[in-house]
Length: 338
Image 1 (cartoon, rainbow, N blue to C red):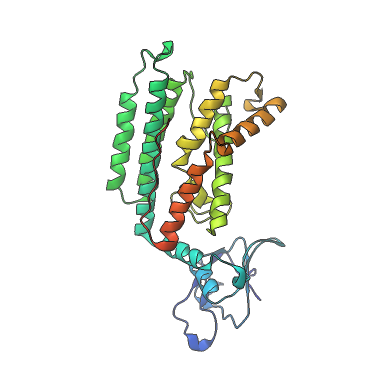
Image 2: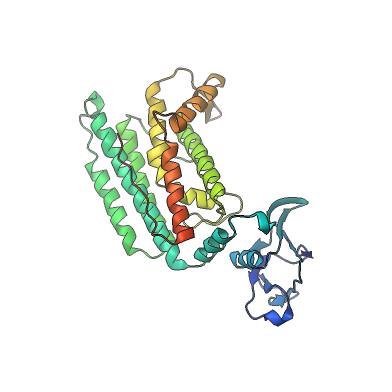
């Protein structure tokens, strides 16, 4: 077992210069910063049946993972004395080829842009359909008589069209953020929510609490579906790769936020269950009574025959799997709301 713990923070990457005649896995430890006491291009020979132990602060690259997969070699990721992940037991792993293809696509910048554009265009289109649906649904209410969503919808459409002209993830996220701002501004108008502003994870009001709850449970659902298919859910494109969050899940669930999560929030707000929320030091939470009610409502929304929102999640993950594993064009279905 090659233990890399003594080395400074860096990346374990594949070194193509080492030849097969050396009978070792071609890996090199590269430092991410200059250190006069460390040889930046120091080859670490790995002999037959020898594994690798990698501490959490050394970030293994996708190239090194591909090399381990191809050589049937174990890699263990450690946090202190605890194993937090591993590449191991290749005879029983069904997703080796999928992981290899996923990591290879991660290195392809053109794939990054095309993937991000497809995901974000579908998300904005779904947001527009959601707003139009509830605008028609609530048009006869008194507070809707003087509300006009056309300027916001036009701005969102312009942001969607502008995605094709941008070539960096940061630029794409900028237009997506602008569209989201218009979306939540219109969302507040539709539900007659005074002074509502979407603030993730801080729970400054009960509406933000509901959004956080829905997005957290949607994240868990998509993560389980992706893991079941064999994906590495930390390999994100739109969201930065981070071993502390499921970045790929956050990428893939973007079109489902308005379709699945936001519609559930509207459903809860319209149910008007009393004594659901409690506030303490500016942070909102569910009351003891409401926790069970909200959980059952989410389960009914996702899995009952009448609601069956899980079908949208399964369809999305299947499309992404076919894209990575079989090379099919990525198609994200935009669902009409009824």
